[in-house]
Image (cartoon, rainbow, N blue to C red; front, side, top):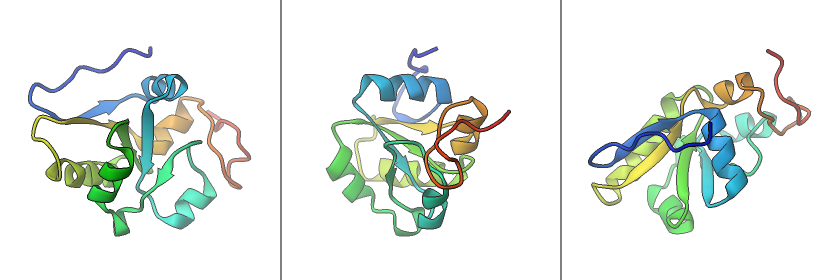
Length: 127
């Protein structure tokens, strides 16, 4: 289902499913910020995701480059991307809503969605 998830009342981070995110990406206006490290991104990544490793995370830089887009943070399983999302929120409007890929790239692959990179060969992961 491509419908947007429910919004928090006063801003915050909202989990989105891989299927919802895939629909948003197809329609445009959504940027995926991958906060894993360089070597992880090189091994496999969601097509179009922008690498901004948590170890060098610059919330203001992300905001300046992608502030007009719907921003969705993503990592391997979800912990680092929540940390980055919280840092991003501290630099903006208290009522701002941004998004987090629930389960990270692992959930994306489990949903049968494609990843790019030498470890993936550009194909969906096996169930």
